Every structure is written in structure tokens, then in C-alpha cells.
Length: 202
Image (tube, rainbow, N blue to C red):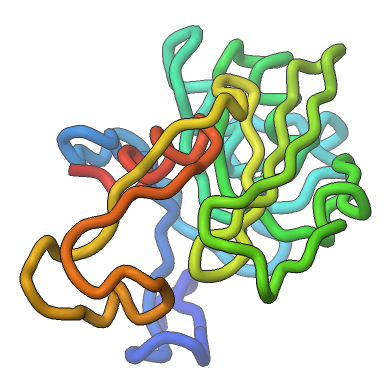
């Protein structure tokens, strides 16, 4: 019996060993690996009292941040990202972090950011907030769905991104727009561009 074998009902293969990986966004090279040991998991070298109030997602990102050079950039998805994590990454390890997040995480003025017609707003519309003391930027951006992001590296200066297949016929990606075919551009905040570029890797 494998002592670190776990059950995950959301995966095609329900039983197996779960690993958390730190990967280079450009090459895909895995430079950090931590097997998940289940409930009560502790990470080698972490101070129990130092991490007492942090959830596991925050702890594992801080562990990888401790292995990175100063002023490195981390990109995380909403399972890990919290305003507290973004602050601690720079405070403890001088690392920047940009990521999508869930709106039930404390530390951002969600009532302000969500105060718009999310259903009928056009793609590219966004609201934003800034915490100057922590240099913490938050954005609520309308893509197909509303996407909350946070960053201590990139702000919310308007930029444009392109979507669509570029062909002569309407594609599935264009069904939610008024564009009949081809590629199209719409607005976004600056942090969305590097997140889309580096989160999935190349």
C-alpha cells in the first residue's frame, strides 16, 4: 500500500499520487516537486508556527518561492491565489505573483470590483482597485465570463488582446461576440496579458 496514494473524485483516474510542481513558463522544465501526503501535510523546512494561519495552497507557493531567485515572477491559478499570498511572496522572498483568484478570499474590495452588470457588459470591460501600501492591484475583467485577477507586478493599464481563428467562417470562439469571422481585438488590463502568456507555458 502506497502511503501517499490519495483519492480524487474529480479526476479521470480516481486514485494515485498527487504532486505539486514548480515549472518554468517558457521551457516547461519542472524545477520543483512536492508530493502531497494528505491531511496534515507538512513541507520540509517550514516553521509550523510561521505557517499556522495559512492554507495549504498558500504554503506550497511560498515553499516554491523560497527556492527562486529574487524578483522572480510566479503565476498561479485560483486554487492558490489570495491577497495574503501575493503580499507574503514579496515580503518574505522578494518574488512577484500574478494570478486568478476566487472572490471569497478576504483582502480585496469585492463589493466595489463586482459593482457592474456582469451579465450584459461587453467583453473587455473591467473594474480595478489598488492598495498603494502593498502595491497590490486587483481587477475584475469580463472575458466570456468574469475573471478576477490580482498582481503585485503588473497594473491595470489598458491593453488589447486578440482572439479568434482568423478564418473566413464563424468559429465557436466568436459565438459570444458580434464579429462574424476572423480575429478580433478587445481591451483588457495589463496583468491579463502576461498571465495568459506565461500561465499555460509555451
